Length: 270
Image (cartoon, rainbow, N blue to C red; front, top):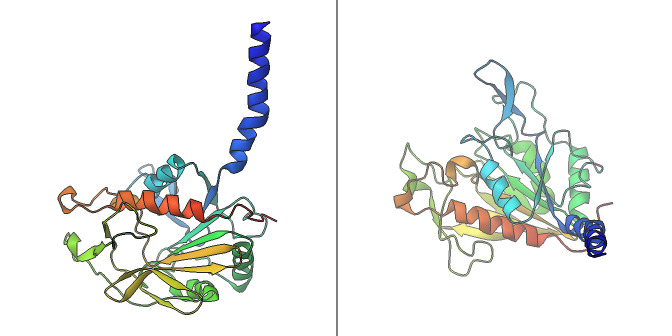
Protein backbone atom coordinates (compact mmCIF):
# COMPACT_ATOMS: atom_id res chain seq x y z
CA UNK A 1 0.00 0.00 0.00
CA UNK A 2 2.82 2.40 0.89
CA UNK A 3 4.48 1.76 -2.46
CA UNK A 4 1.22 2.46 -4.28
CA UNK A 5 0.79 5.75 -2.40
CA UNK A 6 4.40 6.74 -3.09
CA UNK A 7 4.10 5.98 -6.81
CA UNK A 8 0.81 7.89 -6.93
CA UNK A 9 2.42 10.94 -5.33
CA UNK A 10 5.35 10.80 -7.75
CA UNK A 11 2.92 10.56 -10.66
CA UNK A 12 1.01 13.61 -9.42
CA UNK A 13 4.21 15.56 -8.95
CA UNK A 14 5.26 14.74 -12.50
CA UNK A 15 1.81 15.52 -13.86
CA UNK A 16 1.17 18.81 -12.07
CA UNK A 17 4.28 20.38 -10.58
CA UNK A 18 6.88 19.69 -13.29
CA UNK A 19 4.77 21.21 -16.12
CA UNK A 20 4.01 24.18 -13.87
CA UNK A 21 7.72 24.77 -13.30
CA UNK A 22 8.41 24.52 -17.03
CA UNK A 23 5.62 26.99 -17.72
CA UNK A 24 7.27 29.47 -15.33
CA UNK A 25 10.68 29.12 -16.98
CA UNK A 26 11.64 32.08 -19.12
CA UNK A 27 13.27 31.48 -22.48
CA UNK A 28 16.18 33.57 -23.73
CA UNK A 29 16.53 33.42 -27.52
CA UNK A 30 19.72 34.38 -29.31
CA UNK A 31 19.63 35.52 -32.94
CA UNK A 32 21.69 33.37 -35.34
CA UNK A 33 20.35 35.04 -38.50
CA UNK A 34 21.69 38.61 -38.49
CA UNK A 35 24.83 37.32 -36.77
CA UNK A 36 25.75 34.31 -38.88
CA UNK A 37 29.51 33.73 -38.92
CA UNK A 38 31.45 30.56 -39.69
CA UNK A 39 35.06 29.42 -39.52
CA UNK A 40 36.92 26.23 -40.39
CA UNK A 41 37.72 23.83 -37.57
CA UNK A 42 41.02 21.87 -37.51
CA UNK A 43 39.44 19.24 -39.76
CA UNK A 44 38.55 21.89 -42.34
CA UNK A 45 34.82 21.78 -41.62
CA UNK A 46 32.91 25.04 -41.43
CA UNK A 47 31.31 25.60 -38.04
CA UNK A 48 29.27 28.46 -36.64
CA UNK A 49 30.95 30.69 -34.07
CA UNK A 50 31.02 34.21 -32.60
CA UNK A 51 28.46 35.21 -29.97
CA UNK A 52 26.68 31.86 -29.90
CA UNK A 53 25.59 29.74 -26.93
CA UNK A 54 27.63 26.78 -28.18
CA UNK A 55 30.91 28.62 -28.75
CA UNK A 56 33.08 27.85 -25.70
CA UNK A 57 36.11 29.74 -26.97
CA UNK A 58 36.85 33.39 -26.22
CA UNK A 59 34.45 34.46 -28.98
CA UNK A 60 31.37 32.72 -27.58
CA UNK A 61 28.49 33.35 -25.20
CA UNK A 62 28.70 29.96 -23.46
CA UNK A 63 29.57 31.50 -20.08
CA UNK A 64 26.70 33.97 -20.24
CA UNK A 65 24.41 31.13 -21.31
CA UNK A 66 25.46 29.16 -18.22
CA UNK A 67 24.75 32.20 -16.03
CA UNK A 68 21.26 32.51 -17.51
CA UNK A 69 20.59 28.80 -16.94
CA UNK A 70 21.83 29.10 -13.37
CA UNK A 71 19.19 31.79 -12.89
CA UNK A 72 16.44 29.48 -14.16
CA UNK A 73 16.27 30.46 -17.83
CA UNK A 74 16.02 28.19 -20.84
CA UNK A 75 18.15 28.93 -23.90
CA UNK A 76 17.02 29.03 -27.50
CA UNK A 77 18.80 29.71 -30.81
CA UNK A 78 16.78 31.28 -33.63
CA UNK A 79 18.58 30.41 -36.86
CA UNK A 80 16.00 31.75 -39.28
CA UNK A 81 14.77 35.29 -39.68
CA UNK A 82 12.52 36.50 -36.85
CA UNK A 83 8.85 35.76 -37.44
CA UNK A 84 5.75 36.02 -35.30
CA UNK A 85 5.78 32.23 -35.07
CA UNK A 86 9.36 31.62 -33.96
CA UNK A 87 9.36 34.54 -31.52
CA UNK A 88 6.38 33.04 -29.67
CA UNK A 89 8.79 30.76 -27.84
CA UNK A 90 10.97 33.64 -26.62
CA UNK A 91 10.57 35.86 -23.59
CA UNK A 92 13.89 37.61 -24.23
CA UNK A 93 15.38 38.03 -27.73
CA UNK A 94 19.01 39.06 -28.16
CA UNK A 95 20.35 40.50 -31.40
CA UNK A 96 24.12 40.95 -31.25
CA UNK A 97 26.67 42.33 -33.70
CA UNK A 98 24.79 42.07 -37.03
CA UNK A 99 27.12 40.98 -39.85
CA UNK A 100 28.91 43.19 -42.31
CA UNK A 101 30.13 41.98 -45.71
CA UNK A 102 33.58 41.71 -44.17
CA UNK A 103 32.29 39.02 -41.80
CA UNK A 104 29.82 37.14 -43.99
CA UNK A 105 29.69 36.74 -47.75
CA UNK A 106 25.91 37.20 -47.82
CA UNK A 107 24.90 39.17 -44.71
CA UNK A 108 21.27 39.24 -43.61
CA UNK A 109 20.23 42.83 -43.05
CA UNK A 110 17.39 43.89 -40.77
CA UNK A 111 14.47 44.78 -43.04
CA UNK A 112 11.14 46.58 -42.54
CA UNK A 113 9.29 43.26 -42.19
CA UNK A 114 11.63 42.24 -39.35
CA UNK A 115 11.14 45.58 -37.59
CA UNK A 116 7.35 45.10 -37.72
CA UNK A 117 7.53 41.54 -36.35
CA UNK A 118 10.01 42.41 -33.60
CA UNK A 119 8.27 45.60 -32.46
CA UNK A 120 4.91 43.82 -32.34
CA UNK A 121 6.52 41.08 -30.23
CA UNK A 122 7.99 43.66 -27.83
CA UNK A 123 4.63 45.41 -27.58
CA UNK A 124 3.08 42.15 -26.39
CA UNK A 125 5.61 41.87 -23.57
CA UNK A 126 8.89 40.70 -25.11
CA UNK A 127 12.25 41.92 -23.85
CA UNK A 128 14.55 42.85 -26.74
CA UNK A 129 18.30 43.18 -26.17
CA UNK A 130 20.31 44.97 -28.86
CA UNK A 131 24.08 44.55 -28.53
CA UNK A 132 25.99 46.43 -31.22
CA UNK A 133 29.69 46.97 -31.81
CA UNK A 134 31.77 49.69 -33.37
CA UNK A 135 30.88 50.41 -37.00
CA UNK A 136 33.96 48.57 -38.33
CA UNK A 137 32.66 45.36 -36.81
CA UNK A 138 28.86 45.65 -36.90
CA UNK A 139 26.30 46.61 -39.52
CA UNK A 140 24.88 49.68 -37.80
CA UNK A 141 22.68 51.33 -40.49
CA UNK A 142 20.05 48.58 -40.59
CA UNK A 143 20.36 47.92 -36.86
CA UNK A 144 19.63 51.61 -36.32
CA UNK A 145 16.48 51.31 -38.41
CA UNK A 146 15.24 48.85 -35.79
CA UNK A 147 16.62 50.75 -32.79
CA UNK A 148 15.07 54.03 -33.95
CA UNK A 149 11.64 52.45 -33.55
CA UNK A 150 12.34 52.70 -29.83
CA UNK A 151 14.08 56.09 -29.70
CA UNK A 152 17.60 54.63 -29.75
CA UNK A 153 20.48 55.34 -32.14
CA UNK A 154 23.91 53.69 -32.14
CA UNK A 155 26.54 56.33 -32.84
CA UNK A 156 29.36 55.77 -35.31
CA UNK A 157 32.07 56.32 -32.72
CA UNK A 158 34.70 54.36 -30.83
CA UNK A 159 34.36 55.15 -27.15
CA UNK A 160 36.74 53.48 -24.68
CA UNK A 161 39.22 52.50 -27.38
CA UNK A 162 41.66 50.04 -25.82
CA UNK A 163 45.23 49.70 -27.09
CA UNK A 164 46.75 46.21 -26.82
CA UNK A 165 46.53 45.03 -23.20
CA UNK A 166 45.89 48.42 -21.62
CA UNK A 167 42.65 47.07 -20.15
CA UNK A 168 42.17 49.98 -17.76
CA UNK A 169 41.34 52.11 -20.81
CA UNK A 170 38.04 50.18 -20.98
CA UNK A 171 37.07 50.59 -17.34
CA UNK A 172 33.60 51.87 -16.46
CA UNK A 173 32.67 52.31 -12.81
CA UNK A 174 29.14 51.46 -11.71
CA UNK A 175 27.56 54.05 -9.43
CA UNK A 176 26.36 52.80 -6.01
CA UNK A 177 22.76 51.61 -5.87
CA UNK A 178 22.53 50.94 -9.60
CA UNK A 179 19.16 49.29 -10.41
CA UNK A 180 20.69 46.74 -12.81
CA UNK A 181 24.21 46.11 -11.58
CA UNK A 182 23.71 45.43 -7.91
CA UNK A 183 27.01 43.64 -7.23
CA UNK A 184 29.31 44.69 -10.10
CA UNK A 185 31.36 47.78 -9.34
CA UNK A 186 33.82 47.99 -12.23
CA UNK A 187 33.14 46.65 -15.72
CA UNK A 188 35.05 46.42 -18.96
CA UNK A 189 33.72 47.48 -22.36
CA UNK A 190 35.85 48.53 -25.31
CA UNK A 191 35.41 50.28 -28.65
CA UNK A 192 31.81 51.10 -27.80
CA UNK A 193 29.19 52.56 -30.11
CA UNK A 194 27.63 55.05 -27.70
CA UNK A 195 23.92 55.82 -27.78
CA UNK A 196 21.85 58.84 -28.75
CA UNK A 197 18.42 58.65 -27.14
CA UNK A 198 15.12 60.33 -27.82
CA UNK A 199 11.83 59.97 -25.95
CA UNK A 200 10.69 57.51 -24.66
CA UNK A 201 14.19 55.98 -24.35
CA UNK A 202 16.10 56.59 -21.11
CA UNK A 203 19.75 56.09 -20.13
CA UNK A 204 20.51 53.16 -17.84
CA UNK A 205 24.30 53.59 -17.64
CA UNK A 206 26.28 56.76 -18.40
CA UNK A 207 30.03 57.27 -18.37
CA UNK A 208 31.42 60.81 -18.64
CA UNK A 209 28.20 62.02 -20.34
CA UNK A 210 28.32 59.14 -22.83
CA UNK A 211 25.27 56.86 -22.83
CA UNK A 212 26.48 53.27 -22.62
CA UNK A 213 23.18 51.45 -21.99
CA UNK A 214 19.70 52.70 -22.82
CA UNK A 215 16.21 51.30 -22.26
CA UNK A 216 12.76 51.91 -23.70
CA UNK A 217 9.39 50.77 -22.41
CA UNK A 218 7.30 49.81 -25.43
CA UNK A 219 3.80 48.50 -24.87
CA UNK A 220 4.07 45.69 -22.32
CA UNK A 221 7.70 45.04 -23.25
CA UNK A 222 11.14 46.54 -22.94
CA UNK A 223 14.11 47.26 -25.20
CA UNK A 224 17.67 47.34 -23.85
CA UNK A 225 20.56 48.59 -25.99
CA UNK A 226 24.31 48.60 -25.46
CA UNK A 227 26.99 49.34 -28.05
CA UNK A 228 29.31 46.42 -27.26
CA UNK A 229 28.80 42.62 -27.04
CA UNK A 230 30.73 42.84 -23.78
CA UNK A 231 29.49 39.69 -22.03
CA UNK A 232 31.26 37.20 -24.29
CA UNK A 233 33.65 34.63 -22.84
CA UNK A 234 36.86 36.59 -23.36
CA UNK A 235 35.73 39.25 -20.91
CA UNK A 236 33.68 37.31 -18.34
CA UNK A 237 36.47 37.15 -17.08
CA UNK A 238 38.55 34.99 -19.40
CA UNK A 239 41.23 37.46 -20.41
CA UNK A 240 40.83 40.23 -17.86
CA UNK A 241 43.66 40.34 -15.29
CA UNK A 242 42.39 39.48 -11.80
CA UNK A 243 44.52 42.23 -10.29
CA UNK A 244 42.47 44.86 -12.13
CA UNK A 245 39.30 43.73 -10.34
CA UNK A 246 36.91 43.88 -13.28
CA UNK A 247 33.45 42.55 -12.44
CA UNK A 248 32.17 41.45 -15.85
CA UNK A 249 31.37 38.02 -14.40
CA UNK A 250 29.28 39.63 -11.65
CA UNK A 251 27.75 42.00 -14.21
CA UNK A 252 26.66 39.03 -16.32
CA UNK A 253 24.81 37.64 -13.31
CA UNK A 254 23.32 41.02 -12.36
CA UNK A 255 22.22 41.70 -15.94
CA UNK A 256 20.73 38.23 -16.34
CA UNK A 257 18.69 38.51 -13.14
CA UNK A 258 17.46 41.96 -14.12
CA UNK A 259 16.51 40.92 -17.67
CA UNK A 260 14.54 37.91 -16.47
CA UNK A 261 12.68 40.11 -14.00
CA UNK A 262 11.64 42.46 -16.82
CA UNK A 263 9.49 39.81 -18.50
CA UNK A 264 5.90 40.66 -17.55
CA UNK A 265 3.79 38.00 -15.89
CA UNK A 266 1.00 38.70 -18.38
CA UNK A 267 3.16 38.50 -21.52
CA UNK A 268 1.05 37.63 -24.54
CA UNK A 269 2.83 35.07 -26.75
CA UNK A 270 0.19 35.18 -29.52
